[in-house]
Length: 109
Length: 114
Image (cartoon, rainbow over all chains, first blue to last red; front, top):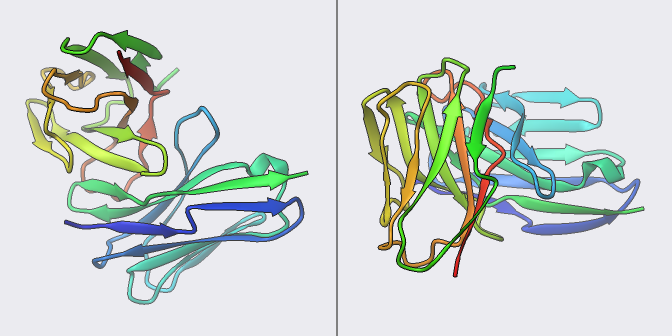
């Protein structure tokens, strides 16, 4: 079946360092969404990318959708302790979202 | 306030018992979804419903059942046939099933079977 993989599974950074998580799909996606789940919480929508090669920014967060629409990345510049959580990508498939395995980000003050 | 509500937040059951998890939304969304979350495994799709009175199996439907008799409600029953039911269960809804809209999640139910 369709799979969406994310790397790394876990990353620990010092506050102020940059962070990137990568998402790869086994098939071409109609769109890619990104969610953040704080510890003990539920996933919350961050952004959606639809076009091939699209890049979107939200303050310190930069999201990119690959040219072939099979991969995506999330980059955080100068991490803060409030960035702690698990970041999921989710690929648009027929009538459903296929979630990636997630990347757990730990930020040390 | 509009939103999606799951209850209860924590649930304990004895092995061999069926248990039903509640999910209600007042967002007037057509599509609803149940995901299971285990440590290090992300979100896995159990069942989904594109519209009332219709639902489809996801990737890990064995041992689970659902119903969609009302647009607002999509309860999930964890049956005794589910071999490893202890997990965090998340319900989500989307405006339509075409997946080009964001998913709204409930707070989740943490089920522990002893």
